[in-house]
Length: 191
Length: 177
Image (cartoon, rainbow over all chains, first blue to last red; front, side):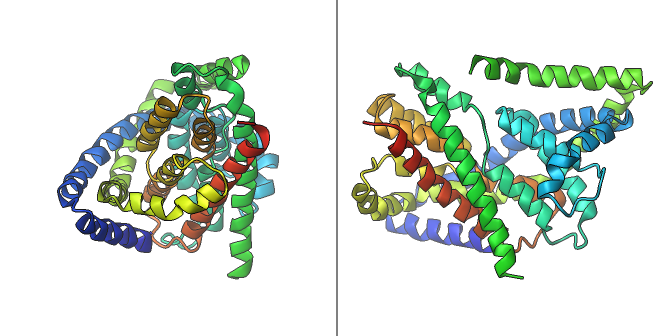
């Protein structure tokens, strides 16, 4: 992340000078502070809510039943997760929430999944392979129906706004597969 | 389509109802459990905040600098050669960086080129099949304080690029304009 951050900032500042947009750049840097607070406030609400719900699920033992139920699915990909580990439930629920476009549930469950994966991690400062796998699945965005996009298309009078559903599913599945393949390839090459 | 939409709307209320009722059946003091769990929410988000701020500063200044337009001009001949509308590039570049900005750009494309144009359809598929990668990275890595990311970032960026190429190709194959 370090390199990405330095690169983005340097490129931005250099080009802002070339394009004579230094005013806008300065404004945007302070805007970023505002956006970060707004997004965090929003996250604070939904993360607390879902941590509350998952605590109920943990205390009632439902999390172990869910984990056992989803184990066969998850352990195919996540080979480093031991049997009945509490990370299995949030990982699966996060993927399901993404599938159905429930971003408000997906992010908090994803955070929970990362925290559970961190308990398995031997080096707490370095990302584990299971975490990378989980993040790549998330950034590949496997979604069945892109509701927001369809909404915008139909707002502007598209003849058939749902025509994009099938191509979106095909594209998202192929690209998720490619992203996972890239991850496994990197692991193999850099071992 | 309809069923999936209904299922999506039902999923969260049903899940919460089931979790609570199951808890009650197991004699868990669900209210106390909820409050105890929710207590950790704020501290989690406070831990994420600096990561989020860092990524927002980089992304917002990149957008404001106009560097993006130069990248667009550079890639325009390549797009023209593949017979892809130039507008698509804006969505493709911004989507991994910012969710709200890409929605804005997408709405603009639909407004200016019409909802059934090639540009709109391709952008729609990119919108649906790509994710705000850097936001996800900041939030998830920030939540557990990971500092060394090994080869995760290159994998995500390559994944995004492949995803865009695939989205364009799938639309080109399935639609006739």
